[in-house]
Length: 395
Image (cartoon, rainbow, N blue to C red):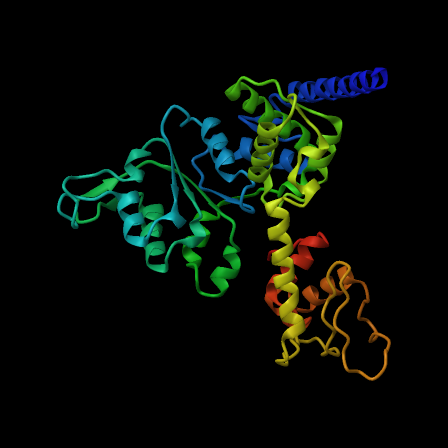
């Protein structure tokens, strides 16, 4: 009994020390390391904060880029709240959630009788955000025909409602977001180049959570404090729990972290979250399972495919012998029918990371071409680049 009591006191003391550190960090965060509810202790987020403070006072169009769940909408709101338009409306539209006809009516509004069910005039989101900020999420998912309509609004700052002929002029600050590679879409003819140049005036890249682990303790504490406030609880993290949080890969980024904190806080016993409270400790983490399935799906095609793929030869570069598929993680590549284990060709590296960089450089940093060169699937290539921390260069 006495040993258990001493252990409890030791854990409580360690936790209180960590909680004090988190609160101390929270004080330091304001104002230079925190914008609204966005925590930014890490260097990547400090760079984002600097860009936010620079662009906020202007009317300039901003393009937010990053993986799903990295907080693009929160940053968009922060830009609005730091701008001279902060007293006006902030309006959000998810472009991927609506069909083209619904998106047109939603953004531009419609006149009475313009289509079945249009029983009266309705203002669109552009008019609703007049004087304020309009945030268009998932801009990379709009159709080619709608891209032309959006381009006109950006150029002329005017439009007509659906079914109408009256020109409506608006003063709107536009912030857009996407998790897609717009440059590749322009190259493939899927996204208008003129629209790309219009929206890519200022581009802010939001880092994934795995590249800003220094922010995780303060962010997790922020989410837990919010949970406690909303549920009248006093749940705490144990030191072991915080170590689990900072070591996770977080493919779902900030959104996944928030959900994980809420789930474990809800199921916590005696108002303390231990390292054993997390689903990943019992192989019950859905994200972990999905990540494993995606990895398995990415690996298998390269092993089962018997279709020969021509080697990609870049201009002014002598063609090299076809390399073997890249082995991911600890799984070796399938043995090839070479008859003997010949040494690698001169100039072709053996390590996985070195082979990936070698292929990307030969293919002008075009990921799809590099995947063909290595005889692996694009999904497998993307996973390998991500796993090895190789950032795809944009030209």
